[in-house]
Image (tube, rainbow over all chains, first blue to last red; front, side, top):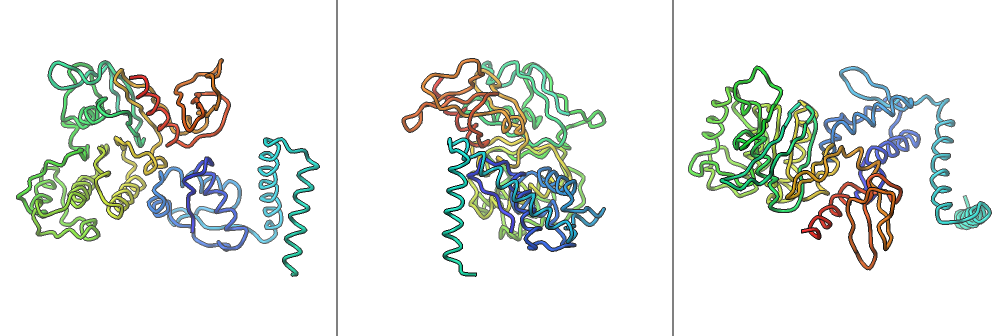
Length: 128
Length: 266
């Protein structure tokens, strides 16, 4: 279910784009899944319908959605593109992590050290 | 496009607002906000064409329409509807006046409003819902909503906003609302007009505000930046710069800060 974090300074359309992309890549919205209509989603989230239209159009431009005239937007992600898209999303998350850490004044060495320590702890807790 | 040119408005000899001008694009969703008593509701009445400006002009851009009120749906801050009439009779009267052929209002059932009850028997919230659905039923090109939704309980307010958004998606009307509760509508509006006693302090698209308004925490106001508001808050001094460099802000925080700053100036 798509939702808005009211406390976040991230613009609403950006929040929605991220959630939908994540939903598609994680297969929560499988290929050919029909996205909620602009009207439905806008009224449910109480946001301007133009914002939803902008999100859907941008995701269409990025190759995540496809519009069928008169019947709305559908998920379109070919299996062979999945790997590439997942890597792109990971790169975006990494960019955000790095830029925030740099703002706090950490060096690349400190980032790598923190990440490795975290990952070690996670794999120790998760034998799989 | 709706154009207000050099509008002075008010009651009696003292104008509430003098010589203000602004344009509203078709399909815009505008929030008029500002401190109490600066004439937000008066300005909305001018837009509703029920209060004529003492000077200046308002042009709706509907050259073929004799009376602009045909295309305007106005929800005032106090509902002066005929108390002794039945819901169904008032609806019929309204549709007759607007020349609309309709026989039911879908929203009434969801608000538990009986088609046969008298207006005086409805709660404040039910009256607002009834009035709103009546307004929307005539397909206005311009929808004007005063602060009235504040007196409606969360369930009915949710219902009212959902209905408004659906209407926005279906018919793309121009919407102007007077609002003090920013959180509720900050993602609905695409333009904000901040009104003060001395006129329009700010008239910007929300897109511009979100991209350019920044928060700077510093004892002294930053030089070489356009500081539009400052306040001291939990022991630190904050400045709102537009444009400038600093922390990103939410629309509701921008407007809250403007409001605090405006009161300090008075």
